[in-house]
Length: 207
Image (cartoon, rainbow, N blue to C red; front, side):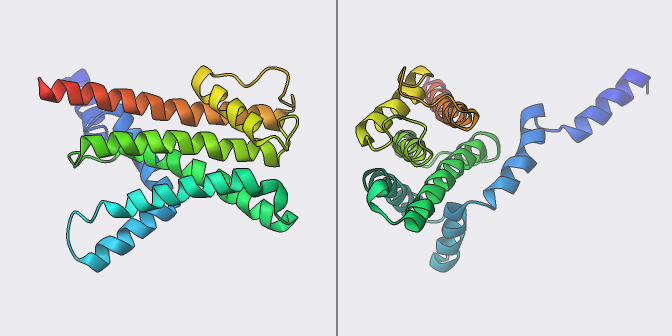
């Protein structure tokens, strides 16, 4: 066999599926172990004894996360300092978890979509959850002035996620706050791109 033939076979043996899936799949699957939702899904699946497991586990978890975001946004300044810090930490954890879910959905999950409308609704709920949770992060880290204004924090987070830019004149120009803004843009737009890819794939399957 020629040199280029051996080189092609070597690359094909190490990247049998695709470059993106082969490189990102181990990384995404490793991050999945940090997901509380993934742990609960496995726990429920093992107890109900059927495969695939029920759909309600992720749905209930997403609704609880959304509700937690609303409560943390409204009550953050009313809570004792230590409890408010716990709320802020969980708010950031949930946003990271949503990103982990989207990453695995895009690059590791290979099974058929069990319900297209359910998946679309789930992505939209996750998108709005990210907006609410990030507004909590802006308030807790005093990245927005005044930090006590829940509606301003929510609007700024919405504007950052949708237009890739916060409300002018209200954000604190610190390096950490800029990092929060960039992180929200990455997570929110990754969700948007994932939804668009899902819709395009659904349209192609119906043709």
